[in-house]
Length: 342
Ligand code: TXA
Ligand code: MG
Image: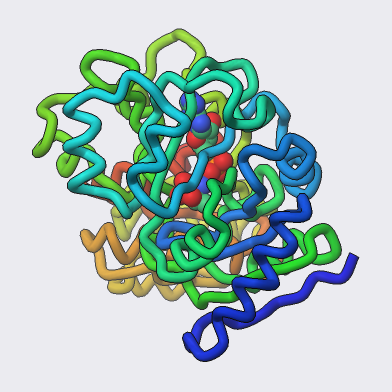
């Protein structure tokens, strides 16, 4: 299959591009498109065979549910039930935006393979002109995971999608680099209080300012299996092993010296002002403490590491404030929990 990439960045001829995408989607195909978080790989959420193509293109485990993307808020009532007053407040405040709300699903509407093994459905309204333009031209919801091969960092540029899915999907809408850079927050509204299943672009602080304290599975991981099924798989992983390291310049120098002494080449991901000269490759992802910038640039940096000959990647820790919680969640997953110990 030939993969076409069309630019929708200049708002010139987007109607034609949306029509092309809509035609593919309506005939049961998949299309990659930008959202404000990361690129998604969409299929009609009501078409089981089309949704199956998402799992095939991504190589995604079939027990991992997909998020349903809608083009206007009211559509949520077509797919979800037991929507509380708090949920409506969150939708009013943060939709469109990087917040996925998990509700009890209305049976028989969404294709069964969108929500395998669960009685719930995750819904979000993305805040991106191309995603919204496409959803509105289509008039129907899109099931869409991130448009990467399963296990790889999510794509924040059309080129990332092309690298992973070339030949496997017919069309990529190229809307330039995404803004938020990490995925939406997944908030389970079926528990009291609600539970953050995955930290993301809408921060815990923002959510709590509207509905009061929420639970966070990710900050206090218990023994039980995670309820967001996707969280149990290897994720966001570059090719070389990745270790998280404290923001301590002496420690970072010592780590690089030690690794060089072992004959290893080192890629370092960290804040702009770190300026460690000893690493073989250095990818700066934003001023220290600017967690928004780090979120925006993290996945691109992880993918750049794959273009180097690094034997090992060191990624400098940030704090958990705001979207820092999502950045550290992704880094710890990419590292499979490993901290570098000198
Ligand atoms: O920002 C995003 O959310 C992006 C863009 C494309 O919208 N999408 C995305 O989808 O990250 P995906 O499939 O890569 O991640 C969805 C996450 C997975 O961890 C999945 O297990 C969880 O959301 N999820 C989806 N539906 C769920 C449900 N009904 N219950 C619990 N977790 C759910
Ligand atoms: Mg994903």
